[in-house]
Length: 139
Ligand SMILES: [Cu+2]
Image: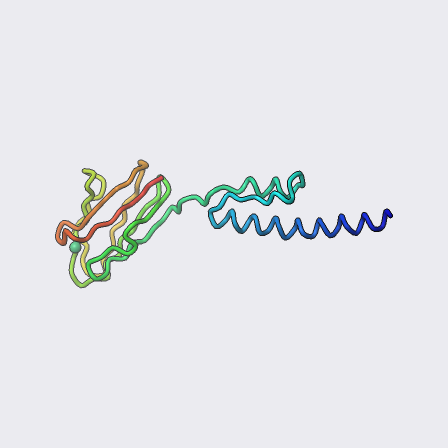
């Protein structure tokens, strides 16, 4: 009897190992599902400590064909966004929140970088081409 029990336990441990990796992958994908099959085991508790991915410190927005790509970026507080102008025409970025984004004229192949020190959602547009709109989310 004892040998049989040992075999069953090791088989269950093997399943738990795969289950923990699966739970971690799901957590990384943004889900909070943690494998209930392994409740009470050590590795089940380690997967539950996984938190949502932090916002990046840097983001780059390409200006191309009179559009911001991506149109919405998310960064951490204190992070920065750089705009790179791939258009031949110049652009002038202004935020709808006064005095946050006020770029100089960004010419062909020009760049502009702004550091965001305060959390919030900053909508901006090009004051030359008013249809060009984007959002920077700082959190
Ligand atoms: Cu423009």
